[in-house]
Image 1 (tube, rainbow, N blue to C red):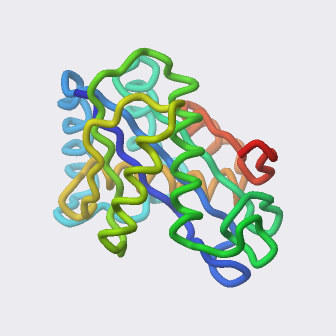
Image 2: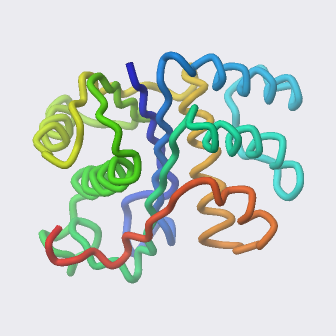
Length: 216
């Protein structure tokens, strides 16, 4: 079984809310899951964490968290990817009053999920038979959850998604790790552009989806 964890940074509001919106995916197989557990346990030991992982320390203190993930990415144990956008310049649907199809925060999130997954599986092209997709849970109606599942499973560019799960990151360390990664992307790539810190996360393939082509 392959597991793919997704979390976001930012919110679907405009013009209020965050300036940027980003999502990160981290994929790992059941055979390699112990590697991620080991990293999580080691990081908790280093930082003396007994509760949910929150914001990473900045600067050189990020290295003990990010470098092991970079090594796991290089060996193929994990597969990461990211999409991001600048809201003011965004040309896709569902975000702004002048967006195609108007404003719909739930459908905006769904659209970005789709962009992330299509980008992810365009880079990692191995044939996957059983994938569990795990989202960090936020408030959604049962109908919205069902619509997201139908939207993703109806996409022929994506592999078969055996399970689509919504979980609270409080009890899922893998989601907490992804949350840290997407926060670093937002802080470092979109806001600070510090060269030394950018190098620490260059293992994550990224795509700017601010300018969405018409064929979306």
